[in-house]
Amino acid sequence: MFKKVMLFIFIIIVVTFGSIIIYKTYQHTSSYIENEPIESITTTTIIPKETINDYLKNSTLLYVKEDTSVFNMDDNRSKKIAMINKGETVSSIKVLDSGYNEVIYSNSLAYIASSNLSSTPIAIKGYTEIDDIVYPIDTTHIYDEPNTNSKVIATLNNEDKLKRIGYDNKFSEIIYNGSIGYAKNTEITNTQEISGPVKENQERKINTNKKMVALTFDDGPNPISTNKILDTLESYNVVATFFDLGTLMERYPNVTQREEKIGCEVGTHTYSHVNLNTLNGDALQIEINKSNDVFERVLGHQPTLTRPPYGNANALVKSTVQTPLINWDVDTLDWKTRNVDSIIANIDSYSTLDGRIILMHSIYGTTADAVKILVPKLINEGYELVTVSELAKYKGYTLEPGHIYYDFRN
Image 1 (cartoon, rainbow, N blue to C red):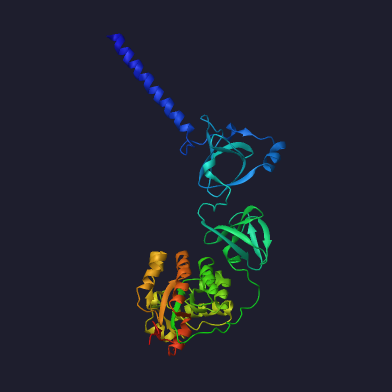
Image 2: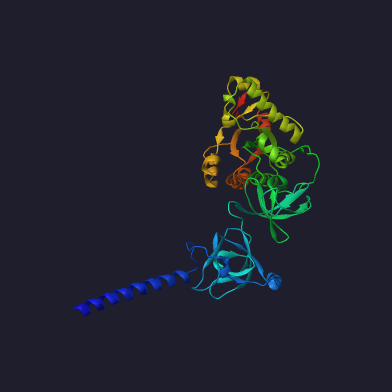
């Protein structure tokens, strides 16, 4: 009986240890182990200094798709030696049958799962991915890191062209001479512009017998989505009215200048998007003056239209603001839905748009995408796309300072 018990215990021990070995083997033969502790880099094969340049010369620059592990081997004995963030680059020596790339990491041979590498540039972690062409505005610095204290690797002018792969609220990630660099958003634009004064609006032919509608855009300018909206308007030779914020006009003056240059109307949405109803007389006048000053600096004139934030304008606001106050009667709710189909559906819910003012926001990519559909749609439906001032004029309205307008329907 004792022998049977001991045999049973022995079998249990063998099965248990066998399972552990199988489990560990499975762990190491899977693509990589994200939770494994990072080992010392001394466990890697060091590349001799005299041959490192030869390795680099024959390597291929690849981009990390997602945060990923770096290993010291490409088999079940491998140990994780580091983590590399999304968007970073590695020099790949070769692709192995094991499903790994042999790469150079910290002057050593290391291994990364091939499925996590790409030959196509990837935006770094925290950046919004994009694939477009941008141009420097006058003199633009390219930095090796996304901050102005880092090394300047190039200084470009507006004749250069750059591929952009990502951006955040301050910097854009660009490809320069085959490498990653960073440019301030305020120093680049989607359109190649020639330095000089803003051109006067050219006369447009408007068929006054057609139905008319005014597209309006708040909260800009934005160097990406606003420029996409302008691309669409310009391609169809139509216009809109932009109610821009003074704070953003200071950051992206070239975008506001482009709005006016292609024939659009630019009104103020105040300097800082404050609820004007909450201000006393002195604070209200300061807000107005700051906006006027920005308009003078950026466009060379003061605004002729105001859209009060949230549409709020009490008696004090009406008596203080020296321009007509323009609200809206078609709210696309683009700020809420951030959905192209919903934006179009909200506009389509009106039986006619003749004489109406449509509210959108020029800071959303989904709005820019919706405009690309909306503009040719409205043209095909027989509408003239005009500015707010043009709509008022051709519908027989005289705009007066301090008065609120929601539409110009006959």
